[in-house]
Amino acid sequence: MTFGEQSQQFFRSDYEKYLPETDSFYKVHVLPKTFDGAKETCEIEGAELFYPVDEDEAKAMITYWKEKQFYSTIYIGVSASLVSDVYQTIHGASIDHVYNKWAKGEPNNKGGNERCVTLLDDATLNDIMCDTTRSFICKKRASAIHWNLLCDLPDKHYEYVEQLGRCYKFHTNPKNWTEAFRACNAEQGYLAIIDSQAEADHLVNITRMANKEDVEGSYLRGAIHLGFVKKNSVWRSIMGRPLKALGYNTWGTNQPDGEDRENCGSMFFNGKLNDIGCNQQCFFICEREIPLLENSINLRFGDYGDVQ
Ligand SMILES: [Ca+2]
Ligand SMILES: [Ca+2]
Ligand SMILES: [Ca+2]
Image 1 (cartoon, rainbow, N blue to C red):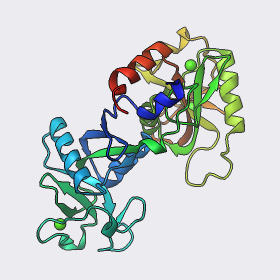
Image 2: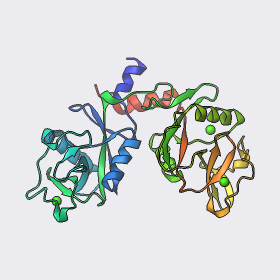
Image 3: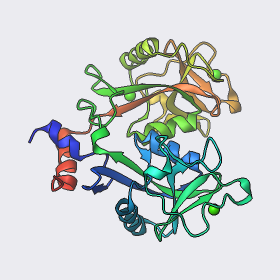
Image 4: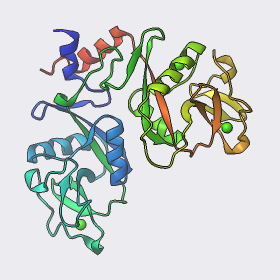
């Protein structure tokens, strides 16, 4: 069996549940979120908010989530987001085409405000207000996995840079620093840390090449979030090392200039560092070190080698 074939049986180490019947990987998120928060969390992990296609999948997932957490209900990827009472999956299909066994008296659209759907542990559905927080499950179909061999992760947007021995992904979906940190983490990278002039040059290059001119919305053009922050008046990388101890510490003209208003790290498009408000929306770059091949193969064969 080749490396490439093996990757079909692996998505991410945290998607530990595999169902042969659906040829899909699943992960329970114990921390409750709103419907939109749950949907986005799955998306930044490269997956989708789970909804059961049929009763077998609903029951298998109930069994799985009961091993992981004690809640009696989870969000599923079904809502009436466009028109009240018209329930659709996150893929836009009518609920009539997937598992749709409502609890007695549901959906009742209580107060006219219930547009998001939960699965109860008796395998019935209920509509609730979308701002209510619930735990949830993310799902990834194996057939939808696009394995990036060089970067060793299921995301084709990471580009391997041989000279630096690592991978980068430029995000053209602006986020604040905290959300950017979370997004990189969720896709198994980290907010990029510049360790050398060569790396700075490369980040300037990917920034120049990025398809970012037509991105709409209110965000700060001209800066890119990076993986450093100010803690107790000292600028440190998110791994904890003082910026001065890294191989690159070149600030832009008059930077840092934000005092207590700018406690997060970014770079200008020219690669020079800039302190920035942590709530400022910007583009950002994730970095990924490539695990030793041997470890990664052990992980896959160890956990999923028996799944055929
Ligand atoms: Ca209800
Ligand atoms: Ca780096
Ligand atoms: Ca600044």
